[in-house]
Amino acid sequence: MKLLQHSEGQGMTTILACRICQKGKLHKFLSLGSIPLANSFLRQDQLGVPEPYYPLDVCFCSNCGLVQLAQVVDPEIMFKDYVYQTGTSPPLKEHFAKLAETTIQKFKIPEGSFVMDIGSNDGTLLENFQKHGMRVLGIDPARNIAELALSRGIDTLIDFFNKNLVSKIRKGYGKPSVVFATNIFAHIHKLDDFVGAVNSLIADDGVFIIEVPYLVDMLRKVEFDTIYHEHLSYFAVRPLTTLFDKFGMGIADVEQISIHGGSIRIYVQKSLHSLPPSVIELFNLETEARIDSLATYQKFAEDTSRIREELPLLLKALKGDGARIAGYGAPAKGNILLNYCKIGTDLLDYIIDATPFKQGQYTPGTHIPVFPESHFRKFQPDYTLLLAWNYKDAILKKEHEYRQAGGKFIIPIPKPQIV
Ligand code: JHZ
Ligand code: ZN
Image 1 (cartoon, protein in one colour):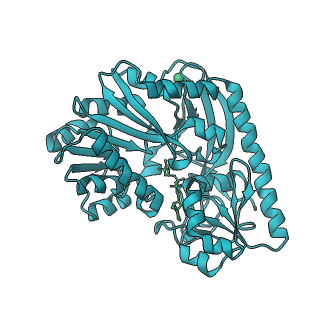
Image 2 (cartoon, rainbow, N blue to C red):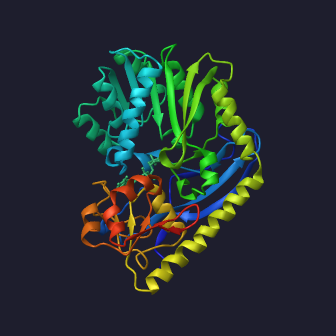
C-alpha cells in the first residue's frame, strides 16, 4: 500500500489517570500506530486532502483492571455526524427486537411506561417498545441518524446525554422505568458523570441496561480491530462493579451474549448491594482468563501483530495467483484492520456495505471504494475478506450461492483462514 498523506489530528487529549478508579498505574500494552477515525469515510472530492490521524494506544489499569485507550478524541468530532445505522444489519435488528421482548417480560414493564435509549441511533430498539404501547425517548448526538428515527415517529433528542438533560427529561416525560445504553457505554469518557446522571434520572425500581463488547471475548478471539478511538474502555464485570458501587448502584444480573463478537448485557439497579450468582460466575471466568495479569495483554499484543504479518501475506499470495479479492462489510472495525494491516486498493478491488451513508464513499486511510451489495452480485470476486466477521454465520448463509459457485471467504481473526 502506498503511503498516504496525513496530518496529526486536532481535538485529542491524553489521559493521565484511570477513568474508573483514578488511582492505578496505566500500563500500555498495545499500540496500533497512528490511524484515522474508524467511521471517517471520505467522499471522492476529499481523497486528495490530508486526513487527520490519531495515535491508538491501549493500557491496563494496575488498580481496578480497566482496559482503556490512552487517548481521547473530542466526541463532537466523532459523533455529530455518523455513518453507522443499526437498522441496516438484519441480525442486529433481530437482536434488538428480542431484547425488547426479554426486557418487558423479565421486568414486567406495563404498557404506557417510559423507556429511554441513550445512543438511540435510527430508533431500531425503541421502535419495538413503541409497538408494545410504551412511551419512548431516544437521545443521540448525530443529527443525520437521529433524523431517520424522527422521520419514523421515534421521539429523539439530538444531543449528548449528560446531567444537564436530567431535569428537562423529568419535566417533559417523567422518570424512565428502563434506560438503555447499548454499544455506547465504551464511548463514554466521563463515566462518573454519565452513571450519576442515569442514577438521578431513573425511577427507584427502574433498570439501566447496558450492552457492551466483553473484554474476555476480545482477548480470546484476538478481536484487536474492535479497538478504535470511539471505544475508550474495554469492559469486564469486575471494574464495572467498582464503578456502580460509587453510586450505590449494583448489577442485578449479567448475561453473556453473542452480538458484536461476544458482549455482556448488564442489568443495573439502584440500592443493590449483594452480588448475584451471574456476577460471581463472570468474576470466576475473568480470573480464569487472567485479565488481571499484564502477561495476558502482552500475549494479545503478540497475537495481534501476528495477524498483521499473516493476513497481508495471504492476500498477496492470492493476488499473485491472479485472484480478484473484495471486502464484505465496511464496519468501523474493518477500517482498523485495513489500516493496521496496510491493506489497500493494491489488494482489495472494492468493499460492499448495505449502509446507504457509506456507499459511494471511500474507506478512511486506505481509500477503497464502498459499493452497495448489488455490486458484489455483478462483480463476484474469487475471495472475499469478511470485515464484518461478527456476522459470519448470517453472511455465509446469505451468500451460499456465491460459495456454491466456488467463491471463498477469508475470515481474518483469530487467525486468517479461508472458508
Ligand atoms: P458492525 C458498531 O461497530 C458501531 P462496527 C459502534 N461503533 C460500536 O460500538 C460497535 O458496533 C460495537 C454491514 N453489513 O455492526 C453493515 C452488510 O453490509 O459489525 C455495517 O456497516 N451486510 C457504535 O461498525 C457493517 O456491515 C450484511 O449482511 O464495527 C457491520 O458493522 C451485514 C450483516 C452487515 O459494527
Ligand atoms: Zn483503574
